Image (cartoon, rainbow, N blue to C red; front, side):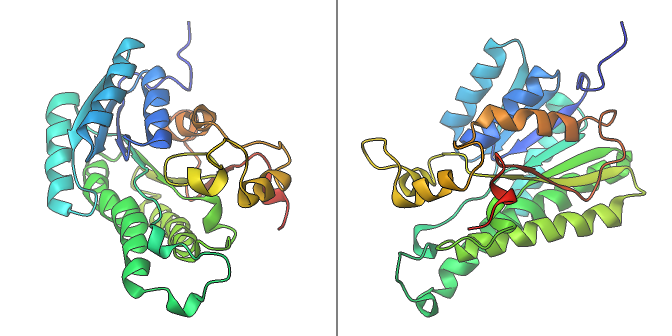
Length: 270
């Protein structure tokens, strides 16, 4: 029987930010397609929980602690992963998020947004979420002339959403950086793409979308009303895009792209 173009057997995938809801879901998806997966993050408890879930489903996974904003920590993690699982061929850069002090309450003054909050969001999403991981893991991919880097951007990087200006700007920078790196490495065997999820409930945005009783907040209801599918996304709905971009057979001529998974949100305007 011919091997599926989506079969990732023999690949080693690193999921930076794999301790989160979306990153963890992507880690499970890659493992289900046959990849050996290294979940990289700071929360060992959540990381090991994801490892156990993958192993229970018949996959292979390890947890490796690392700080995405520390290049030495990332380099040490890379070397440890290579020793245990082999050469890294897929990188999912899913570390990121927003900060409460960088979220503008309704009616607030943008001019009062602190530079510390702004810089913190950019460091987390652009520096730790894309730049440093690409440098550390990309170096080894270039040496072996093979690799797929998948940056996790956001709908907010495409549409300047209200209240989360720093996060939106940082994710827009991630998309731009993805395109730059794709062009630089296009002839060197390394593909670089991004995925922009729409609205997927997770710990960091749950309070913005839902009230304590489970009903939608005003913002949550507004988002649903402008989403043609009339619902939020679920983590497993990113699986297809991740596996496709990770597979060198399925997406060998795809680089520099931002794949949108948003239930149609970006086809409308607010």
